[in-house]
Structures are given as structure tokens and as C-alpha cells.
Image 1 (tube, one colour):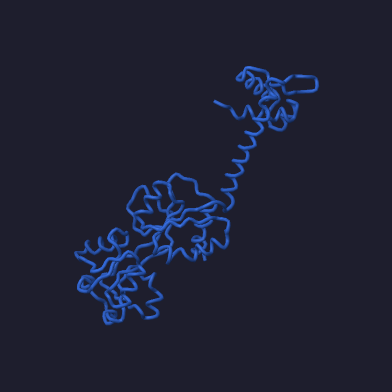
Image 2 (cartoon, rainbow, N blue to C red):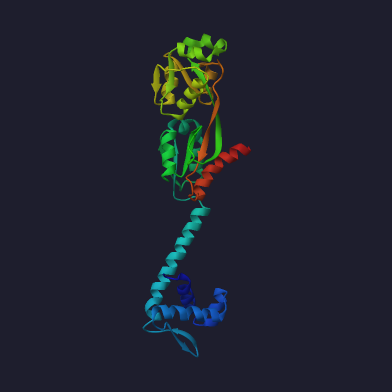
Length: 298
């Protein structure tokens, strides 16, 4: 096996032309430098230096033959180390961000704009998929930072922090505005045309699981692949949508949608951040993550 330290000692001795000067530069003793050169010469089977009264000179058949190769190899290794230090201390390269379309639109879009303005040299690869698919990306190290709809029941997925609470509720357009005047029994929601997200989403699974736990069965009349479509259908009077209150604040304020409170209310959820397990986190990724920590501190 190649011992890089022996070659580094060889290089410094060749540059300095002296065992004493090389020992000073390497911060080791002169005998240790001499022993390293003898060990390398023994491994290669030939002398690398001519010992003269002027100091250490590279031998024609040994040292002079390998010196340019060793010099180039050490320079490339030093460059690689510098590159890794740069990645760990500056925002460069590409970061892969995975989240659902809804999270991108309602949670991340402002942060992405803020990050891009601050770090324009970082390339952003935005991977749009539902939480269950994002978890698979995490497990296979195909994304650098993931935003998940919670709860997530997967022991291989390590949650780092929560970035936004979510309170699922029922909303509808003016056609069903009268229902918003008082609290409705949760079980009464199945008496109306119900709009819900696709059955494979974490959001839908969490709502259905809670309802079943209290003996309520919610069967949507229309399943939607996106929150925006579901909200627009509700505004148009097609039915009652189940959506996080945080995502429809503008519509509620403008009274294009009305909140229908239920008894019991649906349990709170959240959007969380996760990183791939056992993988280093680059400075660029940490800088994106810090945008959310700064928001909490403020």
C-alpha cells in the first residue's frame, strides 16, 4: 500500500536539499526524516538521493525519475483537500431539494428566492414529488435536503426540525357558507361532496387514519392530485375541501372560501426537514437550512 507520508517527506527533502531543513518544515526530528527516506528507498529498491557534503541531491536513476510524478500527485491531493474545504465553508456546487408541489408553493418559494439572491453561484435542483417518494430519495441519497409532510412513520428517516405547523380543516365556497356559522359534527362531512388529496399522500392518510380512530368514515367524492386544483374546485362550489388552514389564509380573508369548523377538529400536523442518513452536509445545504432557523429566532 502506498504510504503518502513517505512521499511527502521525500518531496520536502528534495525541495529543501537538506535533512535538517526538511525536518524543520515538517516539524519532526532529523532522524525521523532520515528513517522515512531509508524506508521509501527500501520499498522502491533503489537510492533516491545522493548524500553529499552540500546536502541531499536527487539520484539520476531514482529520485529524478519520480520527483515530477510525486510533485504532481501531491499538488492534486492538496487541490482536492482545498476543494473539500471550500465546499465545507462556502456556498458552491449544486443542492438537491425535494418536496411536494404544495410545500414548494406554500413553504419554500420565498426561501428559494431569498437563497438564490444571496448565493447566486449555487445551482438549485428542485425535485417535485410527494412525501413518500421524497423519503425514498433520502434513503438512496438522491437529494440533499427534504421537506416532508408529517407525520412520517419510517425509522430510516431522521427528522431534523419542524418548519411549519399545519392545521387541517374543511373549507368551501359561498355555496356552503352557512355551514361555517356553527361547529359541525365531523361525521356530518360525509354527507356532502368531499374533496381530498390523493390517497397515497401523507396528508390524506393522516386525516383518514384519525377519522377511522373515532369511528368516522370520510369518503371523498373527488380525489385531487394537487392542492391548488382542490381549492379552486371548492371555490367554484363543487364541494367541501379538506386542506391546511395555513395554505388558504388569503382565500379565507377574501371570503372566497369559508372555514367549516368540526367537532372534533382534525389533529395538527407539520412540515419537517430531513437529511440523508450518514452523509455529510455541505455548507451550501446548511446555509439553506439556516434560513428557517433564522426565521424561528426572529
